[in-house]
Length: 471
Image (cartoon, rainbow, N blue to C red; front, side, top):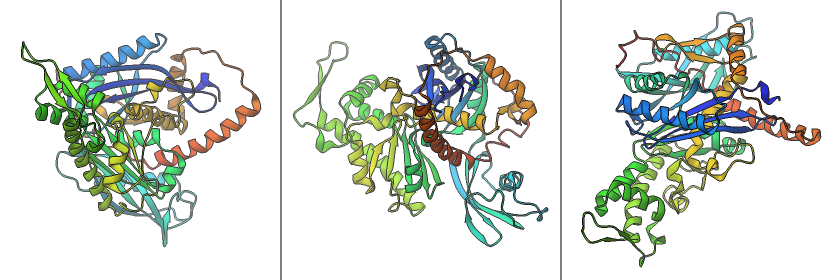
């Protein structure tokens, strides 16, 4: 694998508390090398929903500018954008299709037609289908088929996991990216992006729940038997904990955030009852002393509520006792002290912190492998999946998706190559190189299985007449 042939792909995570832009490229071993990083405070976004277009645009521009400053050779034009928010919902449905050419084997076109049929599923007015994920197929009387391509049959069907969101909320995210002079290459559900960054093939086989505790929402994706079983967005996360501390202890928001990060713990019984935090008084008032134990009680109460929601969603799909891989905690909220113990206590399942280092090349600083960057790393992986499988898609005029065939892709790929920076190639021992490539090929196959299920990808996301741009 020649690194000079690999495109530079940029992930853009627009969160409630932060906007992160990361540029990455795969090296000769198939691992991601981070070429640029930018982070800015997020304004104008509340619980994953854009509330102020202009403020959100400024935050995106700051993150992109910092990313370019970290590597002046970068030229950022297109981005993969994560989407979440409390408006995201999901439902289960079933679809079947009788094939017209029964003498031929089942091909990708048959699968695409079956998926496309599901866009006719009834959803509430004002909502939009974001993603349609086939879970398992049936071919005639053969059930539980993971990949029907190449088989023979008259009737093909599947169980589908359909993810929906508010149409205007989705359009506002795209509008912010457009006005930041960027092209939205694709929109990806954040829990699925995070899952790609922190999971390995053993997790996918054993069954895991990815719980991404962000600033405004807690995103959840459940995998079992190698397929996506459930997604959910819980409207409570780090901002709610900060607000609880602010209201409960009578301090400023910035002080509450600092106390949470520096002294916070998710288990009150582990807090030192004799420890106190001194807060400076306002405008000549005497300093205020706050018990670390009281702080821990406030944090534990909100974290326990979030985890109760996780258990509720697992019980909805009858997987609260059968996830042998347990729960993988990621996102900024996963850095709370003793959160693993509280998670295991509330859910009864094993838990661990998911760091986005499964697919990162060595040599990166520990700060880059922070769980708060899982979504952004996953967005880059999503971009590489599309690139390697010839699925380069662009959101064109009016927000409609344009699907490019191989001939149409050539100038696109040529342009991407032209934008790449020249890097010195290190000599690598051939024998070791081949062994590492074989090992990475297995991991790439797992990623391919994860992303190949996501066939729909916003086909009808903006099919209605384009509304007037907000000036």
